[in-house]
Length: 199
Image (cartoon, rainbow, N blue to C red; front, side):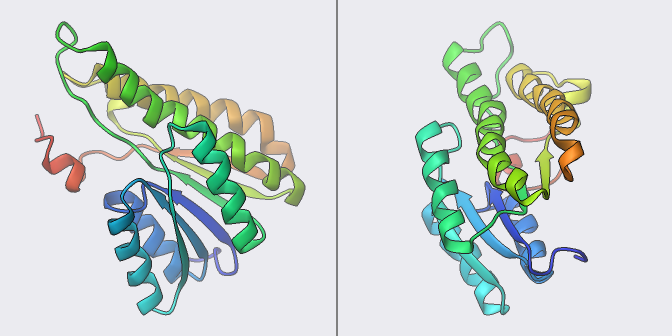
């Protein structure tokens, strides 16, 4: 990946799937990568894969829905690497159910991780990026945030909200050489999608 050599990136949900792929690609391009996710065992695997390939990475246990954990991890990552150039907001979960049967707890869990988590991480990243007058924020949303999906009102709403968050942040910080963009993948086979079969 060109353009990332010497940069510091933090990737949420880096323990598997799209997040792990992003982390590996960034490391292969010469970036130092802060790996953040809830699953410490899988995080260690991702870190080991990067180190074996000659890259630089550190793992941080993080639940993006926890404001305290987000603040703590970003502080630790900045202490470790000295700066933060790239943030990939990838962490996401599903709790699928038809709207008439969806429990409030399942709605809240998905919104808290997929949308509020991205807000908290973006907020934590903005301060060092503003000081540097440089930053790249990439939000991993979904095609279902644009077209909706049966049984995924919570997931689709969270990803649609992430698109709106992306556009607002881009307007706020674009003049400081900080960009904020969203990528909306279609169906990609990952561990998460394997337990949630394609409709």
